[in-house]
Length: 565
Image (tube, rainbow, N blue to C red):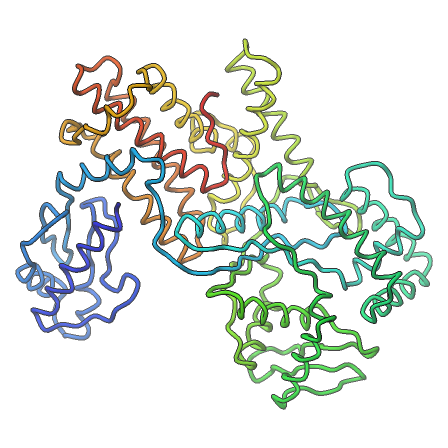
C-alpha cells in the first residue's frame, strides 16, 4: 500500500536528482521522505544536499521540482513548499488502497530475513515481576512486527541454569518443601527461604558453590535436580506469559554451550587476542583500551565459567543462525551489553542489535526477588483483570458471567500490553490503572472498542452480502474524514517496515491509536447505514477495510481484536 506510493516517489526523486547532476547515496530514507501534515509524503532532501552544493535548500528544491517527470502512476501532484517537495496521492491510489484493504491477507511484508529475538530470559528462581513484563511485551511485539514485515522469526528464551540463583533454588529444595502454589511462586518461596537461611548459616553458600561446580562438571544427580527445578519454574512463568498472549519458539540453556565445548573455544579465542590475564587466580579480559574500567572475569578461580562467558558462546550461535539477532535488555544491562559487544567484535562475530529499555514501575516500592519484596506479574494481571471485569459489567450488565470474565481477561491483557509498549523503550514509565482501562481515551480498550464498533456496523448492515464491496470505487468517499481514514489505513505497511528496521514497537502503538481515532471520526461524521444505497455501499466497504486494518494492527500488537465488548 503506502510503500508502493513511497517507492514511486523515490523513483521520481532519483530521476530528478540524476537530471540535475546531483547524487544522494542509496539507503533507508536518504531522500528525507516522511509523512507530513501538509502532504501525503514530503521530501527534505534539499537540506541534505545544501551543504554539499553550497546552495540554499529552497534553490535546490526548486531545481528538483522543475526536473520531476510528469509520468505518474499513484501520484496526483507535486507541490513546491519552500525547501520541501510535497507529494499527493491520486484517486487511482485511493481506489487501490480500499480494494486491497478489503482482503483479509492485505498486509504481507517484503522483508525476507531470518531473525532471532531473545526476550524475557528471566532467571527461573521465581515469578515474573513488573520489570520483566516490559521486556516480554517489547520482545513479543517486535517478534510480531518482524513477522508481519515478512521475516522468519525465532523467539528465544535463554535459560540461566548455571548461576548462583539456580544453585540456591536447589539448596532451597533440599532444605524446604515446595508447596502447592503456582510453580514459579513455589520456587520463589524456597529460594527466598534459602537466602534467609544463608544469613545465619554461612555453610549454605558453600553448598551452593558445590552445586555450581558439580553441575558444570556434569554430575548426573545435580544435573537432574537443577533441570527439574528450572523446568518447574518455567512452567509457571509460561502460564503468566500466556495470559499476556506471549509465547517463545525455543529455549536455549547456558549449559548446552558448556557441554558442547563452545565456552572453552570462546575462552581460547579470547586468549589469542593478547588481552587476557590471570588476576588473583581468576582469568580475565582487559578491555580498558576500549573504555571499560572493569575487567571481564571469564573463569573463576575454581575454573568454572561465568554468565558473560556463556553468553558470548550463545551470541556466536545466534549470529551463525540468523541474518539479524536482537536482544531485549533492561537499563541495568547497559555496561555488560557494551562489554559483550566489544568482545564479540574482537572475535569477528556479528554483534546483536540491542533494545535497552527503562523500567516500568508501580506506586509500590522495591521489587527484589532475593528479599521477597516484589510485585509479581500475576498480581498485576489479577488486579487489572478485576478492574476490567467491573468496567465490562457496568457496560454490559445483562451478559452472562462467562462472557464478562472472558472479555475482562482479554481487555486486561490488552490494557497491560498497550500501556507498556506505547512508550518508547528508552523512556521510563509508570503503569496507570485508570488510563490503561479507559474505554473512551487513548488506551487498548479504546482501540478494541473501535474494532468491535466496526464489527457491529457490518453485522447491522447485513455483512453476508458477499462481493458487493469489491465493486466499490473510493471516489464516492469524498468526505474529509473518509479520505483521511483511507490514507491512515494505507500507512500500516510503512509503520511496520520502519518499526521492524528501527526496532521501535511504540511506533505501531501510536499508529493503532491514530487509526482508531480516524475510524471514530469517520463513524461520527459519515453515517453508514442511513446513507443512500451507493454511498452506503461505499461506506460499508470502508468500514470493512477499517475493521481489517484495526484487527491486523491489534493482532500485531498481541492484543485480542474483540468483535463485541
